[in-house]
Amino acid sequence: MIFFGIILFLGIFFAVSSLSQAQIEIWPETQILTFKEKVEVNTKTERADFEKKVFPGEIFELELEKSKEFTASGKSLQGEKAKGVIQVYNTYSTESQVLIANTRFISAEGKLFRSLKRVVIPGGKYDEKGKLTPGFLDIEVAAAESGEEYNIGPSTFSIPGFAGTPKYTSFYGKSFSDMQGGFQGEIPQVTQEDLRKAEDALLDNLLEEGEKNLKNQIEGDFVLLQDAFRAENIEFLPGVKAGENLSSFNSQIKGNFKAIIFKHSDLEKFTKTLILNRIPENEILPLESFWMEVKIQEESLKSDDYKIYSIDWERGLIVLDLEVSAKAYPVPQEALVKRVLVGKSVKEAEILLSNQPQVKKAEVKLRPFWLKRIPQKADKIKLKLTID
Image (tube, rainbow, N blue to C red; front, side, top):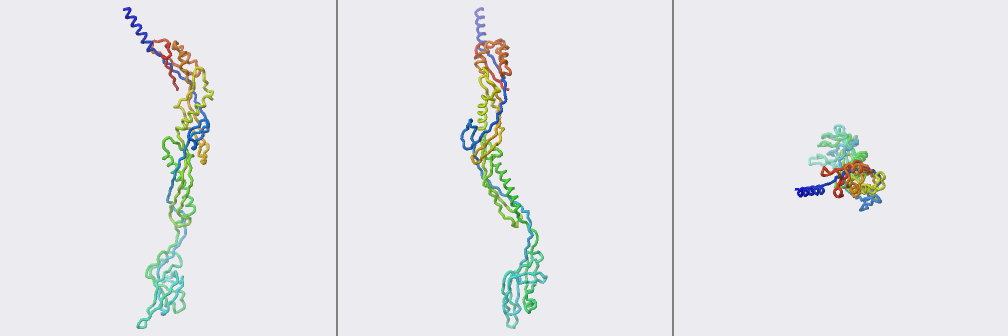
């Protein structure tokens, strides 16, 4: 029984020794570090230069054209003269008669018309019985004035130029169809202001559509800033000239778009390296002997606060005003901590740790629960760092 008792005691001792463990959890003091820098996005560099604060960008180009129909706002007082055909008769003689252009003809309603060109009215012919058959000719005439009142029906016409002579009654005209086309009033007209407004509207539309298309075509990780694109080689094609009598007109505009873009992941890598390089310069978190280094909590890194400071399209670069912030925390020297804590009681260990600079809180847990002191072997101590 004594022998088995010893064996059982040794078994329990070795089991407890092998299973014993100390969990040391440390909450270090943290600090939000904020840096403001001017960094350069350069389309002519392929890799980041942290010393010069430059990281790569790209040029993206797009061609676009837009067209739209616009309503003319101008008004023009216009008139059209009624036109038609008169058959002019010569019952005067067998001799032909020349009528010059603009010869006047007065209708039975008293409306004045004029011939459009010089004509020759053929002479009449006598038949076997000695009766004169009139010569005649169809001629085109136009009303002396514009207006709908000249759109008269078939009528007879006299030639006032022959008044007071035997020819007055021997030369006359007849129309067998209506005079048409007479008009007077306001009609739409394209103005210079219409063309200016059309150009402005199309330009706004082109810029809006260009920005939208750029954003749709720039995929994945790329960033397009609001002022990092511009339109070039803008050409406005009005399609009409000011003064044309039209109720509407179609105009077109076309141009090229150029954008300077960069990858958000490149900016994140850049800002992370930038802030890590700046930490040794920071005096807020001094490195004591207890601490090994200062690290950045990556989830807390914020590099989205940036805006364009300047842009140089000729050189293809953007200078950004960048504000970077991240939570920094000190990392203890694990080997040193373990060496100091071996064999200490829970209370002693917690007091020792809590008295260290930059330690906000410390907690020691032992396993199995009945243990009173931290194991003597460093490999039995597990160190855990918890960042708020």
